[in-house]
Image (tube, rainbow, N blue to C red):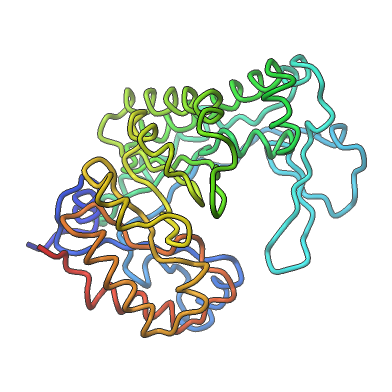
Length: 355
């Protein structure tokens, strides 16, 4: 049975066995530059024959001056369309965030804030035709609109302030999360209406050994809002798959994620959660995207160890379908080029699904 890349991807995500395991990898800017230098190619997805392509909304036409939201306005401060400030860090592409809502004390300040127009229809007008062109090449489409509720909230407010708000100023927290939830919902409904195959959602709510917040706090503040987003997306296009990203340990809430409609879990860091145990426990309800560690295997393993790891994951997690094999994060500059090649060689060599 030979399938198109899109057929292969959708079959795997529907927890059925395709002809081969689909694959994915993305690169940090320094590694993307290295890829171009070594290969002479521009696009890793095309070069390595990945099954997916990404689409995003068009750029905003809205112009907003956010400078009044910062106590000081250094010349090197870059500001995104949400009004979040960024200062260049000391290493590679890393940046430090500067939250514009750090000094807010009242819900009225949140209500008056100039949020971006990611929910505006004009930003999605050309998307359906883009998706059709990609589908016409036999490829699957991942839609990146506005994916995060918790993360975007703390980018704006500051993480420590947001956690204090949960306890001491819940009305402000509710106003902020509700406004962002509306934007996230409408943005992703537009993506679903454009007929993307996979909607990317997610919030980093896990650390190396536990969650960033208690499961009960997550259920209080984030679960109902995530549920609302997914419900609206599924109303718009029931066949669109819901992908949810969180680094770190999130075992306690995986049943909740399944309950609200998550179908794909990413990235399954093996340093934090056991992908083989998760496959046994949740493999009837979830597809897994990732599983190859970027804290261990990719930067520190040999090419032989990378291939061995890929083989084991395909055999154990990919059994019967439900796996997109991938690094558990973007490829950072400490990953040897030989290990990148070893990953794709191993997928080619061992990528047929076990029986």
